[in-house]
Image (cartoon, rainbow, N blue to C red):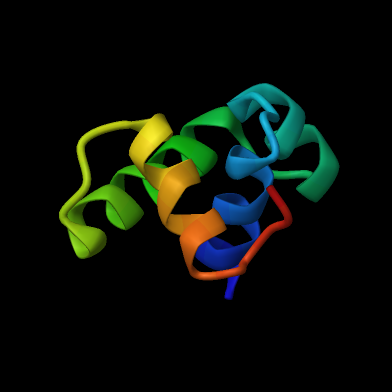
Length: 61
């Protein structure tokens, strides 16, 4: 669940720090979620994560 929330916020252009502050978690935790998403989805970077989120209608373009 938290990974999905992080994915949505990354796709909307928020930084790891902004996401961490909004959920009251550490920046390292946000980065861990991001890395897990990249691995699970077989993606390479935040741009690909954003594209995935938009294509799967997790966020509005």
